[in-house]
Structure formats: structure tokens, C-alpha cells
Image 1 (spheres, helix red, strand yellow):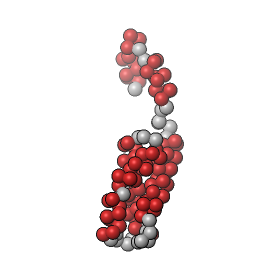
Image 2 (cartoon, one colour):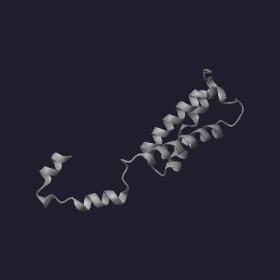
Image 3 (cartoon, one colour):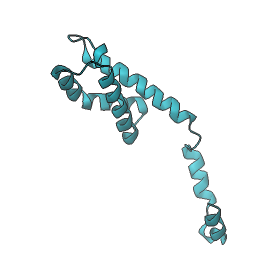
Image 4 (tube, one colour):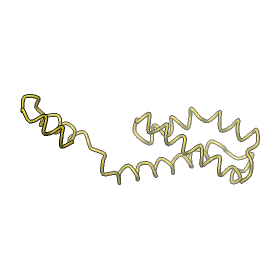
Length: 110
């Protein structure tokens, strides 16, 4: 791995807010998810510092890496069977009734 030079570190630092906004727009608004993807993007950029050609468009290169990291995140999230959509969560909320009397059994089962 090629160690990053000052120019790379400056560019990476300067692009953080713009990369975050770009990732946020790709993910559709999840701030915490966007922060996670930004961190992963930064790691990829850092590891691939040798691939960056000084004098070329750092922002385009960084956005391309962020794009692929966002796609990877969305693909992995789609595979996660523990993510419930809003309709299912609303159904859970409607089904639960504090007056049902079987709360203790439900809590024990959980």
C-alpha cells in the first residue's frame, strides 16, 4: 500500500461533507446509515490511495467509490431478514393491546 501524501489527506478531508451528502442522497435519508457508508468509503479510499492519480478529479473518484459502497450497503440491507417495513411495524403496533391480559406470557416468550 502506498502511504497517502499531504494532497490526498487534504482532498479526503475537504470532500467529507460533500461525500456525506452524496451518500445520504443515495440511501434516501438515513443519517446513521450514511455515516456508516461514509466510514467504509473512507477506508476504501485510504486503501486504494495508490490507485488515485494526482492531478485527476479526486471528487469523481471518491464519489465512484462511495457509490459502490452505497450499493453494497443497500444490497446487504435488502438481504437482512430482520428489517421490517413500515406496514409490518404498524401491524405490530395495532395488534398489541395492553388490556389483553397475556402480556406476561408474551414477555416470557420474547
